Image (tube, rainbow, N blue to C red; front, side):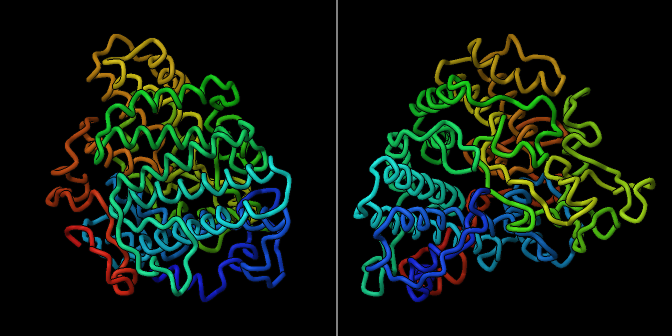
Length: 502
C-alpha cells in the first residue's frame, strides 16, 4: 500500500513523534531527536510523543483554500450545499454526481487516516515494552486504540471494503500489499479497540482536548448505531447504542450551550457541549477552514483567501420549521456582513453562508482562527439516544422525547409529542439533519438510513433515486453509497478491487 511504503521510507517513528500535534496544550511541541523504532521507545516521554502524533492527521482534513478542502467532500455528497468556487474541481466531481478515483479529497481522507492508523499501530505495539507508570501507559494505549477505531470508522463508512492492518509494516511484511477486509471484520476491530479503551479509566472530560471517556463512549454509541443500520443491519445494536449514549447523558459532564453563539466562540472549546474536537490554536496551528466558508471576494474578512467554497442551498436554509431560531440571521447561517474596509457598512452575501463555523475575531481582526473543529458534541449524543431508543423499544419513550426536545427547546420550536414509531423516527432524523448541518455528519446518516433529505418537501426519500434540488435530472444510485478508492492506491496495490461504478 502506497501510504505504508512512504511511511516506512520516512522512518515511521520519526514521522510520528516530530509532527505538530493536535491538542491545544501541546500544539507547539516538537521532538527534534532522530531515533529509530529500535531505540526510541524507552521512556514515558517517548510514549507521549508517539501518541501525540496520532492526533495530527485530523488537521489536514479541514484545511481549506482556493482548492476547497477535503471536509467539503462529505457535505457536497448530501446535495444540501452549494459553491461559487469555480476552480475546485474536486467539489464538482462530488456535487454533480460525476465523482471518480482521482478526487483529491478522497485521497486526503485515505492517506491521512491510514497515516493515523499506522502511528496507532506503532504505539500499540511499542508502548507496552516501556518501563513507566502503569496508569499512564494504559492512558496512552487507550488514546491510540481510540484513534485506530476512529480512523477505521471513517474509512469503512467512506470506502467500504478496506485493508485492515493492525501491525506495524516494513518492506518485508505480508501486509505491504494488503487485501481488503469485510466491513464486519473492520467493525469487530473498532468495537474491540473502543471496549479496551473504555477500561483504561480516562476522565470523562479533558479540557486540553485529549481523548476522554466521554469521547470513547460517544464514538462507541455512534459505531453501534451505524452497525444497526445499513449495510450491516445488526438491529440488536440499537439497544447497545442507546445504552452507551445513556452513559454519556447520565455522566452529567456535558450540557447543551444556552446560545448558538457559543458553538463558534473560541472561549468555549473543549467545554460544555463539546465532547471531542480537532484542536487548533491561533498563531500556532490556526483553524484552517475559514477561507472555505467565506463568500467569494466580497471583502468581509481579514483573510486574503475568501473563496466562496461552501454555503447552504437556499432550499435547505429555508427548510427549518417556522420560528426555528437556528434559521434566524447569524445563528446557523448568515446572509449579510460588515465590510472589512468599513465595519459600519455591510453587504448582502447573496446566499446563506455557514455562521456556526465562523470565527468572528479571526475574520474581523487577525486572520488567525482559534476555533476548534467539532467531531462530537452533546447534541449528537442526545439525537443518537433518541433514535436508538425508538428502534430498540418499538417506539419513543419519555426519555427519548426528553432528549430530542432539549434540542428543539433551544431552537424555540414546539416539543415533539404523541408520535408513532415511524413518525418519531422521521422527526428525529430530520432533527439530526438540521441540528448537525455542515458538521460532516449528514452524509454518514444518509448512508446508514438509506434515506436522503428533500428540503423542498421536508421529507426523507429513498437514497437511491433521490435527486438534488439543483440537479433534478440526475438521481443518486447505489454507487454514491461509497466513495472511490483513490487512483494512487489502486495503481500501487494489485490486491485492491475498486468500488462498484467507479
